[in-house]
Image (cartoon, rainbow, N blue to C red; front, side, top):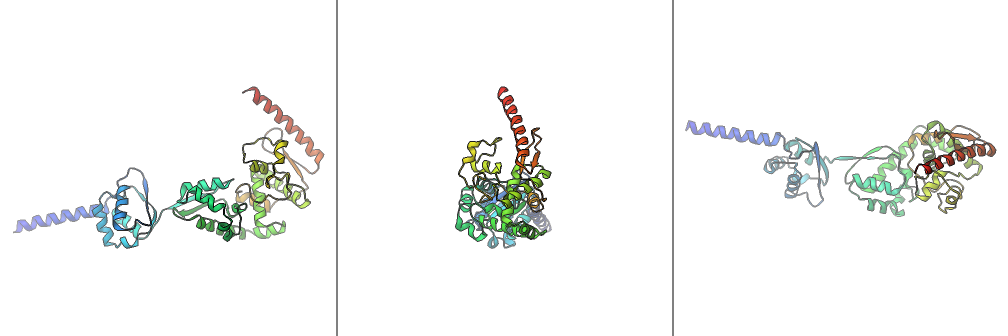
Length: 344
């Protein structure tokens, strides 16, 4: 009898040890450092969730996970969405994650975006809404109306930054978050007051910043270019901004703007239409927005790239001086293009 009890105790200890190992030891069965899985709306029942976990290698032992999950009353608290598990995680922590509905968060990194198609691809790549549904939303006046924008001005909602969302966040919720961030941005550092002092709305400042951002990467030149465009706006001159021609033609690789391009009827053609275009031509950096707001007072009305191709510009307050610099740049550009043709 004593021997039987000893064997029984040993067996019970072994069973307890096995269960403890299955619950607290590494439960995952995938080679990557981490792995994600999706629980759909219609897959929150015990059998479906277990099948998804097993299929994705999240759990090696279905019975051990089921045991701990049942003890923790996980099954009636499953939240649909995308989860992420690190390699070597144990069944207890996986069950706790599901019970708490701790969905994985993914980054939406907005840098310089030019077209709605680019934004749609970015969202579609990282989140559940596909690019087609994002484009449909961005192209719908009714969908955008709650945010106070239209299909042309929707990018004014977007202050470049890194944002985090759950994988299954809707396009509407993404835009709401971006809209809230925009409101907070404009309330800081007296930005609204500065825009008002320039006689511009926040959206108009944003549009102008998008043009300046496309003109140059040099901060010192951005201040002067901003002053040129502000002077043109205030004197009623057309902006005549080359980046708007590239945007109108959807060709951002253009290195030279020919006369034939200037007849493009697009409302973004600032050679034909006075004032600002109907929307931004990219998502400008916050720094460039502040450059517009803090632009120096100058009498500059013209600028042209320097003929040394340094990327910097000559600035002028009269057309004759500007024309001299412009001819020098065109001559240098012609010579460069000729050399390039010879080398083909």
